[in-house]
Amino acid sequence: METKKEPLVRVSNLTKVYREGETERVVFSGMNLDLHPGELVVLLGRSGSGKSTLLNLISGIDEATTGKIFFGEVELTALSENDRTLFRRESIGIIFQSFNLIPTLTVAENMLLPMELNGRLSEERRAKALGVLEEVGLLNRQDSYPDRLSGGEQQRVALARALAHEPLLILADEPTGNLDLKTADQVMQILHRLIHDEKRTMLIATHDRDILNLADRILSLKEGVLTEVKIQDIAGL
Image (cartoon, rainbow, N blue to C red; front, side, top):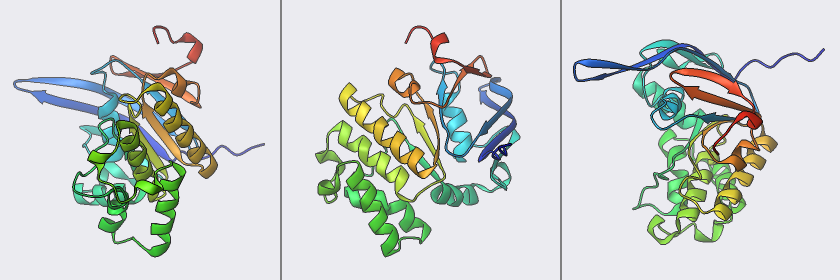
């Protein structure tokens, strides 16, 4: 009998509350979620449902109100903000819809910056990072600045940056939202191949049906409740 894999990420009884003036807004309460090695999991939900909040909590960018998040044996929710930042640079790759490239750095410098900040930029890692840049078809643009790239090219750089340090977990917030259909398909095929070939784990917030077709699991976040859904049950996409 096959032994079930331990989850890479375990979210336990997670609650997030924001104060808005004199009132409190509960984004979600008592949420539980496991992400397993090698999974591509899609997160659905309307604008304001808490998708980005959940990604920010799992990445350690934001702090939970109550509850725990474990990354392997590490309890992220018990770390200081500085330690969460260091852990994120080492173990998590993030792809933002707005790309978040630094305009004064070249493509190669943007990619290598997280490893440089970690003090982990060896020649071997540099070579692997440039290999990822070649994989996304932009090795010949390594000395270009972001403002000289198209939106699709910038997103492919952001994708390569998220993968360059070989993170175990990749989080993506609407990564194809600003892209044309052809470029969006290229980006997701690259992600799918790299993640599954290298057994990375990915959680992506999106409404892109092509991405849904690649998912191992689809989760819906509605009114603070997270449920698993089947693609044939999703309407309006």
